Figure 1: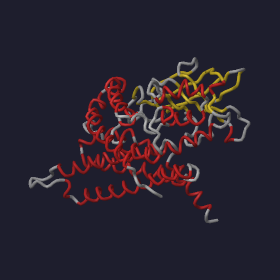
Figure 2: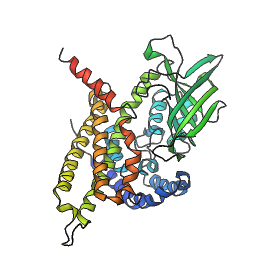
Figure 3: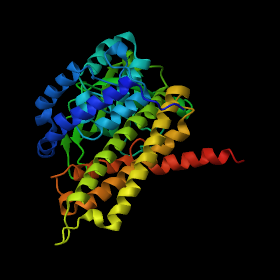
Figure 4: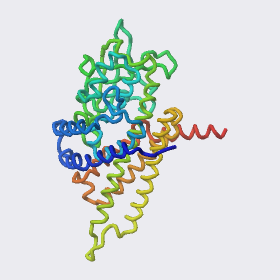
Length: 397
C-alpha cells in the first residue's frame, strides 16, 4: 500500500482548504437561517470561481468534463470539502449526483450520456436516486415493491419511494424497480431513467428530518409512481442488473461519505479545541482545557480520527487497485467505524460548547441533526457488522 500523495494533489487539497475557509465557512450563518433555494445565487457565484480554478467535478471522469481523480485522491479532496456543508455542492461532487454520474458513465448508452450525463457533470441539471421504499428494508436492495412492467416500447412504473434525496428540483431520477419478479432474486430489478416531469412521477413532499423539511438540493423526498410511463430506451445497462449496478455505486459511494464525515470530524475537532482553550470557567482564568475530562476527549478524538482516516484511505487504495469486490471487508468496516467516530467527535464538541453548541450559532448543531443518519443510510451499521462477521467466521470453518 502506497499512500504517498503527489505534489499535484497536495496543491489541490491546499487550494480547496483555503477556498472553504475564505469563501464557504463565512456563508454558513446565512446558510443556517435561509432556505437552500435562496442560497443558490451566491452558491452559483462560488461555483464560477471553482470552475475558473479548474477544480470543478473532481471525482468525475475527465472525458465528460471532470478532473478524473482516483478514488484515493478524491477521498482527500472530499475530506477537505466535508468541513463545510456547502463544500461538495459548490465543487459539484455531491451525492446523489456523484453516484448517478458513475452509473451513467459506466452503463449509459451514447444517447443517455448526451442527454443526461454531460449536462449533469457540467452542473446544468441535478438528479436523484430512487431506491429506498417506505415499507421495505432500505438496507436490502433486493426487497423492492416498485415494479416496471413492459408495455410495448415502454415501461410502466408503479411504486412508493421515499428518502429520494435531492428530488426537489432534480431533472431526472434513476429508479430501482422490479422488471422480472420470476428471475433469481439478484436479477429481478433494473435501473431506469425517469425524467421528473413525467406524468405519474408524483413528488408528494419533502420529508421533515429532525424537524427540518429542507428544500431544493438539501431535501429528502417521498415519491409516488402511479402509471409512470417511460420508453424502454431509458433502461440503464442490462435488464435485471440493477442490484449489481447498485453495488458498484455503493462501494465508491461509501468512500465519498466516509471522507466527507472525516472532514466533519476535523471541523468539529478544531472547534472543540479552540473552545476548550478559550472558554474561561473560573475567576482565576482557568479554561476548559485544564480539565482532565476535556483533555481525555481531545486525545481520544485525535486518535479515533486518525485511525478512521487511515482505514478509509486504505479502503480507497484497495478499490483503486484491486476493485470494490476484493475490498468489501474494508468497505464494511469504514461504514460503521467512521460513522460512529463522527458521532462521538461531534457530540463531544457540542458538549464542550455547552449551551452555545445547542444553538445554530455554530455549525455543530447542524452536523448533529443531519449526520445522525450516517449510521442508517447506505446500509445500517448493524447490517454491515453482521455481513462482515459472517465473512470473517467463514475463514475459520
